[in-house]
Picture 1: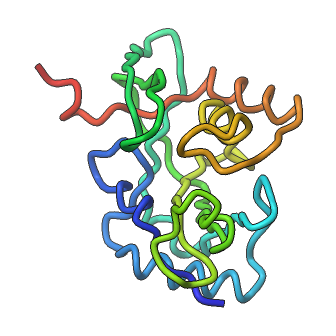
Picture 2 (picture 1 turned 135 degrees about the horizontal axis):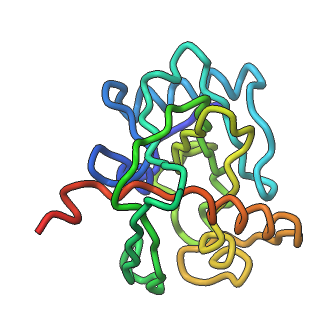
Length: 191
């Protein structure tokens, strides 16, 4: 099975506040995902046609985790933003201070072509496309999907990919994101 790079993942670069690699190209990451997918190093995602491919432990150090643990000294900022044109704005909460947590593992989110085609979000004709790169802090087994993404998917809003979640999925997401936040890139909050 071939894995291509979807345009959506290309936003995950240094200064974006998202997981990124400082020295691996998107093409190299997609090729690694392809190898791992073909070797069955993946688990099912939130619906058929979505898989989470585990990056080889020997490559985890190539990825930067943007998450910090929230504590009493954490300063938070909320902004009304859109991920891309055509989507509804949402409230994004990020930390203004803190030390990014080291990545314990990294998952590569792949969507199958037919799933992407539901909303005309495919970038290629390949069977699978790399949609997202998620660094997971040391000591955390699974990174819950953010509640905004879950809402967008379950309500089938623009930018969402149809999905249904259990009350446990929702509770785990809210609990996690009450304790962790993405560190706002410095360039975004300098005056």
